[in-house]
Amino acid sequence: MARAATLEPRQTASTSLATRPAVERGRLGVYAAIGASVGAVPLPWLPGSLAKRVRGALLHDIAVRHGVSLTPEARAALADPAGLDAPRGWLQQGMRFVGVRLAARALTRFGPIGMVWPLRDAVRTFALGHLFDRYLATLRTVRAVRIDVEEAREVRRAIDGAFARAVTLAPEPVEEPTPVDDQRDAMTSLLDGLFSLAAGVPDRLVRRLDLAFDELVAASGHG
Image (tube, rainbow, N blue to C red; front, top):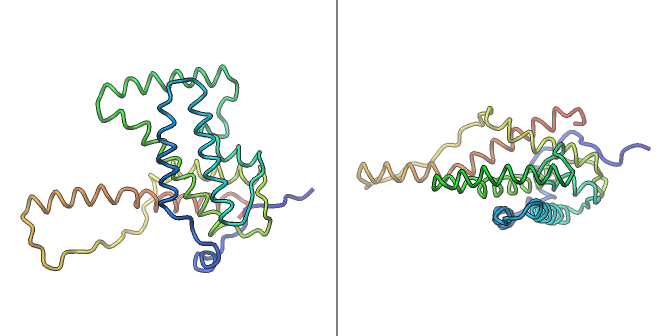
């Protein structure tokens, strides 16, 4: 039987976004915050299960807003925080949990570095929602209402691969506004610049992820 849905050539953003508006970033941010909090549960298996529930709810929320549905298998493939090729047995998952907790405990001894783990979970949850929303809004051109597991696996591979590839890409720079009548002293100007640079990190990360994701979907052989 032929597949009901495959990755096909993307439409232009101007055409797709006119009929498929993107999900609000504030909504994605709430899911990201919830995703960051579940990793603090000090029990094996439970954090992964909770994270999968949160990510699954996020994916369902986005899918509904684009008028499509996910099969249970497709939702599982997209939502699993461990990835497509992670060990599935209880023993292997337990051993992985112990290793992660030991690493996290070691990091917390270095003060602010202990924030790495919840921040990582927040970023990955946000990126999952953002890129899945981008796929439905601008890349998916098939008419099928249901996303099957094969399509979901292809999208998940592109999402996971975007993280590794984003660091090697250089999006076109965005022109920053300059003050018309700058009344700041040198120190204030320097500190304002540093804060502004930090505030722009999420946007720069999103643009790199978008570029990497688009390239991976186009190169998947199903575009």
